[in-house]
Length: 518
Ligand SMILES: C[S@@+](CC[C@H](N)C(=O)[O-])C[C@H]1O[C@@H](n2cnc3c(N)ncnc32)[C@H](O)[C@@H]1O
Image (tube, rainbow, N blue to C red; front, side, top):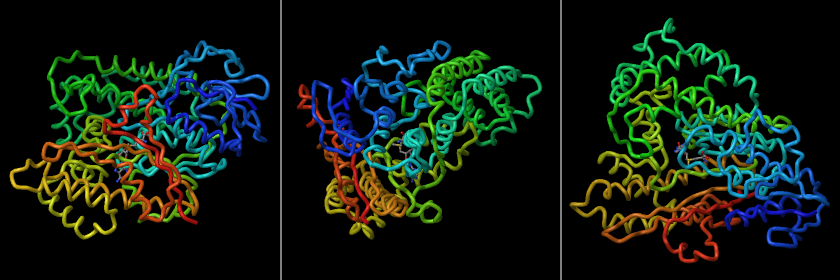
């Protein structure tokens, strides 16, 4: 069998490419015959290779045919109306020769910290799980793992504490079964229902007084009225799948009609003017753009046999303690957990969370505390966390406790600002939370199951000196405390030959592969 690797992928992806090929063909007997060309002796059929490979462009006994993966990626260049019936049979198609990371449902909603669909597919292949297996993501975010598991014919379970993540994951996983026709029909209905007369209820009844007071600080009064009108139209659709799809389209345009500065992760305000009707216009444009983009992808998925996805809104650690349903049932775990000093997920999503009624403003502090990698704490909470750390530090590794205490020795000195003073307690909480989440994951997995963690490192300044927080290496060792075997550590920032010096510049990401004991 001949196979051609994608020529434009990064060094770590080449490592994954080889691992997935060896796993699918059940052999290490792979011979290189050209720059990206390989030959492999295998009983695995051409169809299986074509359908499953993530980092390969083509495969074949005699003639090379394009893999399903490159064809799915290339649907992002097509317009549904022009899709060629023989698209999937073509071998000489002009494919885009670059990494395509946001195609199909993966571009439905922005989400910080998303990882790549191809990476998930490769991990599924490397894990060698069979169709019908259960893929688990304890920090599912926007649902990349869940979608790729479904497409690969696996069941998937995802947990996330952020209600917006849960909504995005639900929409992405359920849209995989919908057709262009259904979405177009729903769009027509929403468009027809978008009028100010006869709204089913008043704007005062949509949001609580406290939430409305907050929103009025971020939107013009007319903008909020328009948003209410759009939501009323969406809520009249009968199919909740479609309702949720359009809610995400609305969520995508909120920033552009709010007073929050665009392209700014921090929450900053710039009051401007608002033109009545702008929200409806932008919402419909966004919905059209999305429909145009996902339609060819959904058409391409038509013949795929998919399994179910379940999305759970909860704190991973407490969920696993309360529920026995999936204990010991999961065949593989693929996730990207929050980083040590992570993004303030809830705060950056707060306009969407409030507008869509997913959370009340009063619930933020409590939920923020449960977030792994949370950054905002009071002095009282800092002291509590530090005492908890002193009680539990023997559960962590010496590298982690040395790092925390090295930072504490400087940052606990009198006169240090509160952000720096909080850092040791926050890091301690992060590593204890991650330990608890690995224990929870261990309880969910079958004996011998593999776990893939994509993790990045951070750095901080302590007494004007830069210190690396090598979260990936620290978690690599920490997982041993739960009894997991270290299988493979894949550095995602492997330098290409020209930039060998970059490796020493600090932050880096890695894929950690573990195996639960038998
Ligand atoms: C890096 S993101 C995951 C992104 C995801 N891989 C994707 O492709 O979209 C980490 C996620 O962990 C979630 N999270 C943080 N603490 C959590 C907890 N205690 N339980 C469940 N989810 C949590 C955050 O809400 C965030 O969505």
